[in-house]
Amino acid sequence: MRHQLSRKPTALSLIETVLAVFLLAAQILLFAGMLARSRQTQRLSQQRHRAVTLAEQKFDEIRAWAALPSNFSSDWSAYQGQISRPEPGFEVRVACNPAGQPVYSPCLGLESQYGSNAKQLRTSLVPVRVQVSWGSASLVLNSLVGEPWHPGPYAIQLQPAPIFTQPVQPDQDFGYTATVTDGQGKPLSDLQMRWFVKPLTGNASIVEGGPRSQQQVKARHLFRRYGVPVHISGTVQLECTAQYHGQPLRQQTESIQLR
Image 1 (cartoon, rainbow, N blue to C red):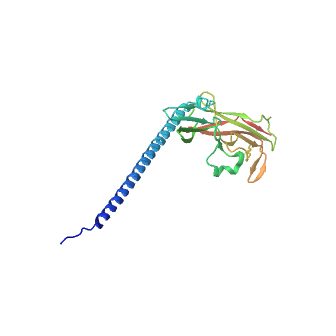
Image 2 (tube, one colour; image 1 turned 90 degrees about the vertical axis):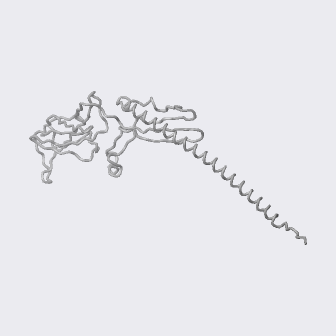
Image 3 (cartoon, rainbow, N blue to C red; image 1 turned 45 degrees about the vertical axis):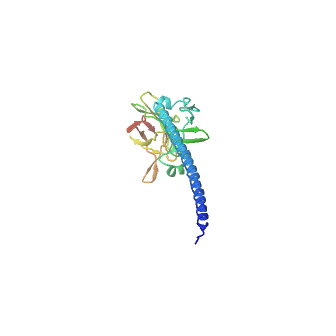
């Protein structure tokens, strides 16, 4: 008795084989695409990491250059607009503002209420921008370069401002400006001063409302004794104090005659 063979299992096996080959090819193509994408991402990551390194190296170079007071106080032409190509495919551009960037001291939240009289560091910080470009991509780093320490000895120079005649009349104002100089006689900027009236045989008072840095002070031949304004004739001195690099500084004016 003959048995007729069925072709149905063979047809199903062929369909399964074709389907399996199709799925395998799709997975291979997908894996190849993911691998190419991974390599591209890795290459971009390496380039970006290298760009950050080049930017940080440029900042280190600028800070080392600005560590000399004579360089920091210059026009920064050595770096302003500089373009360099430290490695093939990478371009580094530098932009800076030697005029400085004003920064409130100690912070904006406390000093903004005083307007133009607020305490600010006006020339002690120079903003620097470094841009690294490669291909169609670029990376930008911004930072502030601080003024270097000046060697001493330090001194406070006091000058009448404006020049006034003595003896000072009752209710008359008189003022001084203070400048701190380094060991080479160069003025130090952005220092905060404090002033006091030093009574000798008379007395006066500091006029409030001026610049909070107190590099300039105004006093008045008027003294409030228990809230009552009085005029005490005699002599006084104005004393100015400051601090630089951890060193306290102090200087008094000459004796001032009050009528």
